[in-house]
Each structure stands twice: as structure tokens, then as C-alpha cells.
Image (cartoon, one colour):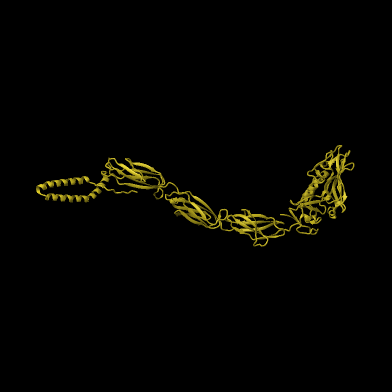
Length: 639
């Protein structure tokens, strides 16, 4: 900006005026002289004429000065120097504001033939006056408004008009704006109401306008707002992305700021419940849920015992982001009807409850104490089908294959410590062959493995063979054990005998197996020495009320056909020594001889009598039925 300030002017044309006055004075003096000669009238006339002339000259003085100024500016031949010029150089943004440093040049202006020395005077922002006889050039880097005033002075001390200018520098981009959100917050950063958005300038003093846009769920085209704030609303569900920046007065822009707004005011679109496995104290269900906006966050499983509409208690909230969730209600009362529902919750916290479904837990089974008082009662047990091969290298005869016999009836033999023992009411598989030393060596393991394979069920029912220990538990007839030494020439024995706690063929008793124990297959026989020792464990008796605790056990163990017992025994009464496998037939408990100590062996094919042990922590027995043959106690695995 250029402006001229008119100082009080020096009178122009002073030489001409002085000359005229001098002439007037001379005329007056001459008139005085003449007046002394010719009289006073001449002086008066001259004096009046001079005064009138001077007044006229004064009127013309202003015009003369103006003309002088004009001529002086053109020719440079003036008593007042020309004003200096100021030029600015830099990068301009909006509103003539510089966005870079500004180079300032102050130039002394002279006429075409002017040779005198001209001094340049200038001040920056009203500061100390600077004087130089050369043009000046400097750079301004400070942001803000700078004012420069400059004038010149000639050798006579005359001053030019002032030349002043001002400019503004803004090199710094505005600070990034802030975005604030206002609405009802749900969960996981979601809003469950419309969201008010306010974009505020970081440096409000230098803000010209705000630009913003919204993309994705709630699109808003790029919008420009004058001033320091912008306000709008996010009304659409889903994820919206806000981008905003500031433009200042110089046109510089701030960095962009991005804000994600998650909004979900809509409840999940689906919630359903399907009942699966029902146990005595548990019910398994499958829940399904869907949410199109924020997605499923969790499933809240509830139950009521009073109504399908009210009185619900939360069992558990299960985090699960898929559209399906399986859950098992635990610790329920047996024989009770439950109303079940699921509440599907989305990530924003919106919920939707399913229609309740009903399910009744199974009636509780009998305790082991109650079952123990019902020995001999029938249980409706069904084993999982299986097959077993008895290999000839272990049974002493040849390979034999067997499969589960269906339709067997099962009776309670014992119940204690959460275990129920069942026995088949008759033999199962027929003609299970055992022969010679290997039949004796492996009878216990073969019989138990065969029954385990064919008469178990899951992890709650394990099959095994009937053994002498089962009978002795309920017998009043004592086991006969006698120790013998020095068997003379009768020294041959099946190899397992050396590992039995009742056998000591080389003078040292075994430590591994009792009569009904074995954990690996063993083959062959050996010869002892002169210190051959052993215990006689063979005995036999008839089962009756005089040898058994009561008639129920006589009935349980008796059968018209012979069946193996998974137990070994030996007789040391004289030579030779005999090795037997226990068996039961009708009311008789006896031993089947398979090997004698001089090396001779025999073979027999009789039947299998399975026993099943039920884990009552995993199965419920007696929820229904009365234990009779026609209406046996029910048995079901607990879920």
C-alpha cells in the first residue's frame, strides 16, 4: 500500500520573490529620495503599489509550488528529493498473505540528471530509524504483519514524502482439528443412538473454513463450512468414517483427522434355541443368532422352572461371535421341567430373546446303596457291539473269533463306591478254547480282553470275565492254600507260574500276579530245580446256602453249562503237580486241568461268562423299571 503524506512545504520560487522584493525596496528608497526633492506624494504611491503586488504574488505562490513540484518530479531538478520505492518478493497464498519468507527491496529514486547524494531513511514496525546512501535488500521471516516506512533526504536537508507499506506472512499450516461425538454409548465402542458430530478448529484465530466428508454407512459428500466449527449427525447404522481438515486464511491446510463411528440401534435379527441331549441333571441346547450390523457378540442362556414367559435366571453368558452356539445346562434337578431361552446380544449391546422351549430332565437313578440292596434284580443294559479274536499262539489251540451276543439279560451282582457290577444271567459266547501251558499262561488276559471288547459301552461300562474272586466274595467256603517243597522229578511249569505270588519253582516266590491277575501275554514252559516250591491253590465246592451267603448268589453264579472263570490255580498234592483254570457249572466250582509238571497238557472248550462294571458317576440306573425280568431297571449314560 502506498500513501503520500504532505508535509509543510518549503516555499518554491523563493529566488524570484526575493528579487521582486529587492526591486520594491530599491524603488521605495529611490522614492524617498525623490520625495525629499519632489514631495511626499511619490513615496505614498510607490508604497501602495508594492504592497498590492506582494499580495498578488502570495496568491500565486501555491500554484507556483505545485508547478515546481511537477517540474521537479519530471526533471529531477528540485529542492525536494523523490520518495523511495519498496518492492516485495515471496510466495503468496490466499488474501495476499505470504506463505514464505518475503524479500524486501527499498530503492532510492533520483531524477535523470540528479547527481547529489540522497540519503535513505526507513523504519521497520516503528523500530529504530535506519539511514543509508544505498538501496537496501533484506528478508523478513517472522510470521505476522510487518510495516515499513521509508523516505529520502537530499544534501540540503530537504525530505521526500513518506512511502509506507505493510504485508502479512503465514508459513505455518493450521493445527489438526478435533472431532467430538455425542450420543448414547453401547458396548465395544458402538453407539445405540444417533450421533452428533462436532469438528472444532485447533487454532481458531487463523481458521478460514473446515472441510469434511463421511464415507461408508452414512455417506456425506465433501462439505465446506466457513468458521471454526462444523456440526452434523450420523443417523445410519453401521460403520461410518469421518475425514476432516482445516484451511486457514492463507490457504494452508492442516493434516487430516479420521474418526470411525460405529452405530447400531437395531436388535439382532434372529434368536432361537433347539434342545439336544437331556440327562438326569443336564440339558444340552444349540442356540442360533444373527445380527447384520455389528455382529453377534454373545449368547445369554437362561432358564425358568415356573413359566415360559417370566422368572428367568441367567445360567451363563457365553462369548461367541458365530451364528451358532452349543451349551449344556448343568446341575439341574432330576425329573424337572425347565423352560429354556437364549438372549442373543450384538456387539453394541442390543439384545433379542428367543421363544422359550421346554425340556424335562430324566428322573434320578438309584444310589449305589439302593442298588446294593437289590442284588439279583434285572437291569436293561445293552453293550456296544464288538468282536474279538483269541489267537492260537496264546490260547494253545488256534485262532478263534467271537462277537457280542445280543439279547442277554443282566442282573445286579454288587454295588459300592459308585460302581455297579452286573453279571449276565447265563453264559454268553460258547466254546472258548484253552489248551496246555499257553492256555494256562494266558487264560486270565484272554478272557478279560474278550469280555472287555464285546461287552463294554463307552467310558461308563467296562466288561470283564467272571472270576474266582467274585464268587469268593459271597462265599463262606474258605480257599484252601497249602505250601509244598521238593517236588522231585516233577519240575516242568508254565512260565507265568514263576511270576505268580503263589509259585516259586526256583525257590523264590513271584511278586506280580495273584490268581486273577495278568497284564501281558506270556508263552512257553520251563523246568525247575531241586528247590522247586509252590502253594496249592486248587479247591472245589458246591454252591448252596451252606457255602454261600444266601440263595441269591447261588442263583447268580449257577448255570447248567460250564463257563470259564478268569483265575488260575495249582495242585501240589503229590506227583505230578497240576495247573488248572477255575470254572463253574451248575452249582459246582472246580478247576479244569490244562498242564501237569511232567510236561503233559490238555485242552477244553467251554463258555464265557461276562461281568460288567458300571461307573455310576457317568450313568444313571433305575430311573424307571422295577428290576423284574419283564421290567428291568433302566440304565442311561449321563450327559
